[in-house]
Amino acid sequence: ELDLLSLSPAKLSALVAEARDRVFAKRIFQPRVAIVLGSGLGDLAARLTHPTALPYSEIPGFPRTHAVGHAGQLILGFLAGVPVVLMQGRAHRYEGFSDLHVRFPIRCLHALGATTLIVTNAAGGLNTRFQKGDLMAIDSHIDFLWNRQQWGNPHVRPTPPLRGKCPYDFGLIHHANSIARRKDITLHQGTYLATLGNEAGPRLMDILEDLLQDMAGQPD
Image 1 (cartoon, rainbow, N blue to C red):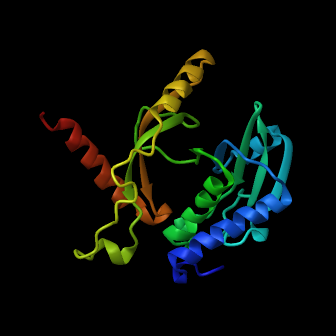
Image 2: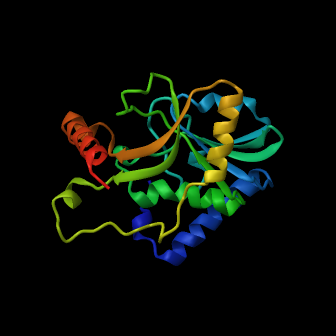
């Protein structure tokens, strides 16, 4: 894998442009929407019309995922008449990739022209009302993606990547809720807890359950 951490901001931007141009060399196409397909959703690619696939191994800087069920390719095409780009699989922090490696493909999708990003994944639920297979629209998140060294270091603080901006489009969430009601599909709405995979373990789950119970019981 390319060591993105060693690149200056200027060289990183140049690599994004190189990745964009490699995709354009395959097909001149400007997507409006980028969709990251999580586990179990890779088959959505079969619904695209006029698709063009490009393996991550052919795109400069793209990390190659080793997760089961992640094909590891970029697909351009039309979904319901809308020009889209799909990431059929992605790299994960728990595979050992840095934040920069995980973010790099998203920067490339934006460079291609996508202005809307839809991210999906398969996750477990702490909410006891959820049933297996239920869907949830994420409207906020808790970031526990620190590595082991950061957890115990009081001098390390995460750098706010959003700079006060909300990454969630509540108009899209409202639209998704409307479609779910019309089609009689169960769609919850809530907070996503991001951890480094199974490393979190049951002890963290116990702490979080207690935390949520305490939060729910706090007076105004």
